[in-house]
Amino acid sequence: MLIKLFITPQIQTVDAAGRTVLGALEQIGHKYISKIAIGRFLEIQTQEVVPEAQVAEYIAQMCNDVRLNIFNPVMEDYTAEVTLSDGRTLSIKGERQWRKKK
Image 1 (cartoon, rainbow, N blue to C red):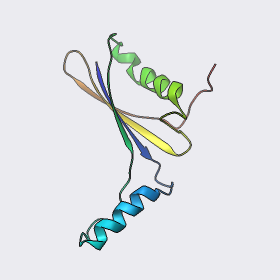
Image 2: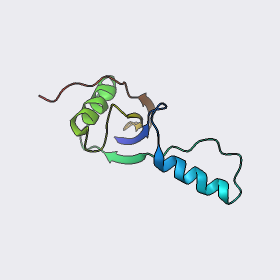
Image 3: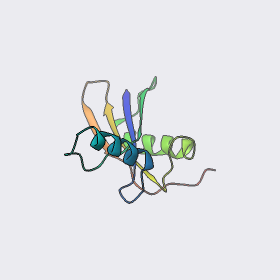
Image 4: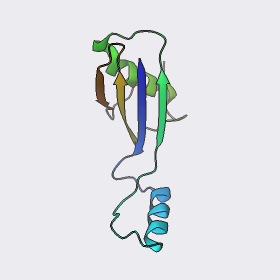
């Protein structure tokens, strides 16, 4: 299974890096861009087969386990594109709820 995980700032979060890039592009003549969000992209290949019914929970748990290392649920959202072993693709939007580490 291949997981493409996109981590982006929440809409209400000030994205200083995005504003900097936007300002630079405007200075060189790109006037039609209204916003840029700078985020992170992870491509994760799993060795185990996760049952389709559990994929969303698996990704949420993975994000919970690494939160504050690569994902801050207070300031960021995540979406995932999951390619299953049979070639089908699922899209998952992360929830803003998270569990405390045990």
